[in-house]
Amino acid sequence: MSNLMLFAGNMANSKAVTPVLRWIKYVCMYYYSYSAFVQNEFNGLVFTCDSNDTACYGTGEEVIKAYGLGEQAIWLCIVINLVIGVESVD
Image 1 (tube, rainbow, N blue to C red):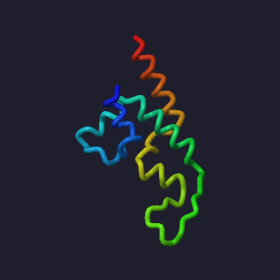
Image 2 (cartoon, one colour):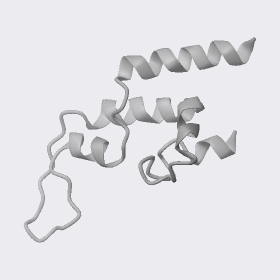
Image 3 (tube, rainbow, N blue to C red):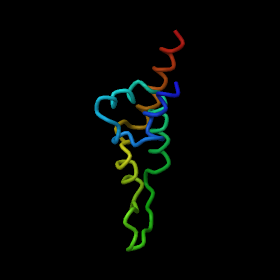
């Protein structure tokens, strides 16, 4: 389980993982949970940045896109987590 956490997006940017291992995030329930959480918290936010800040995001949507966590909608992340949970019980 801890190996799956490495590919969930909270410890490593999911877009920065090598393409050979990128598929692992799709079988990891942590990825879908974290993705839904980040989308819920950052959608609609607007940040103020100083003109000399080079690493500043203007909106929450930019954060979600930068970390590659907006591929699935929140409702789809919840459904996928339910499916993974039901499959793991059997």
